[in-house]
Image (cartoon, rainbow, N blue to C red; front, side, top):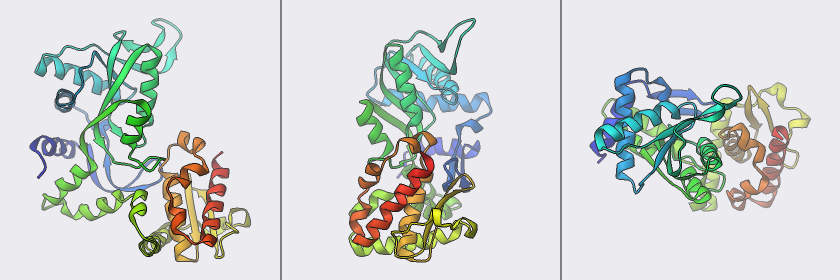
Length: 331
């Protein structure tokens, strides 16, 4: 059963339009059955309550921080309200700072605003998807000789990173810091299961949560069943016929398979279900990346997914040629 602490936070998020259910096209191009945006908070009372949850999460953690840091932009009001709540409700008075997006070259010069922080620092941010914002905040803290030891976010979306681990696991191992979240996507699913009105969204969100790493636990028959289902999903948003050109064709696939960027994101087409299935997976992976991540991704990152090991040799050839074509279109 979901704890009252988490249930109350989700209630707060829903009632203030922070957490919504439906069909939302994300910046990455991926269609999500839910949307979480703390930018929708628009009152002093609500941001104060949210600050209380951040403060509570910090006190429940293993952290003994010397200061707090909030990355621009959404982290700015969050670090302020968290610092106030820590002082008012827990008698923990911590200095805090945040950054400008661009360094100021006049007046009060520099990129950092607030206290000159030092010692062990906790990064306060809104969500974790790929972890890009936390990585940038980590670098900023290091640049001013502070020691970022952890991060607190409102929600862990439980997205899978490049190395077939959760984005939080990747961050913790890569940066040697601990990450805590007020709630996770699993908590939202449990909340919906217990709600008579919103329970209809459970299936869609659970399907959304099913990520590439589940393939590792499947045998070949299960993988092909999975890919055939994803092939049907690809049909819902095919690459338009006018873009199915020789330059966009995966020639190493024995069936018709095309991929290109259209309407700002990758789309694909195939007349074969298995090819359409792995095309759907690759398109979904590429579209879920930030633009910076797309510039650094390599074939090795896809080898780590090990999807190719479930395919026949002929299909592996087409699979990797499709990856090369997609990489060529973003680099």
